[in-house]
Length: 298
Image (cartoon, rainbow, N blue to C red; front, side, top):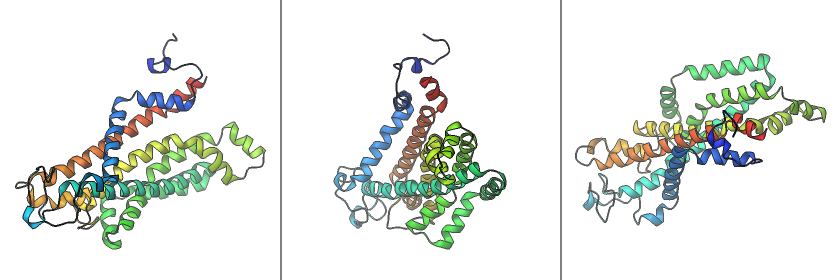
């Protein structure tokens, strides 16, 4: 047994592939596995919502207003008699969709800017990093509120606004990776066989910089879910009757003392989703640590 190597690395068979190393390290992260399980349940719930509840999330039943949890309504109803479970499941679709798609927008912008800055360096790098600092200088919540007010609270606008204001961290990570990778021998070999700059950037260097991007994307989804919930809570996100976890919390403000379940359950869903995604990102960060992979390859 070698000295100084963690037990989880020593238990791996010799010659294990890098994918095997990543999976081994991820599955040993108990909180990441727990987060993956919870997020899997939430995903199944929102995808199969029509099969899990017989109620329409927008169906009003004035005879069942603010009904407590029961066999007919497992999580109770809201101030208009709408089934809370149905609204949570269908609202989760919207909240998670915004989180994922806005992070795709942020990843696209951040990866491109970070790659160009890190690869070209010099004046290009300085200008792009000052642009990044410019966006970082503004309090994001106020800019989100301003843009949402100006553009309107449609699904597309919310996704674009959150995505456009979330790319800066990704750009910095990609830039740092490109600065280190552009000096490697495989880049020189790519130029030697006639590859052009953009081919070298996006076919040779970018795949080797995916680890921090994947982690940033995972954590960014959680951040986007919180941003959407905050906007909806302030009345600037997706508007009723379409349900999201954020606007369900806002609607519950007037009933928190008379019908606390109307606010507790949306809050719990946001809490579970964000915490689960954060733990998954934490597990991926450990599993994708290039130092472990390189040590195992040696």
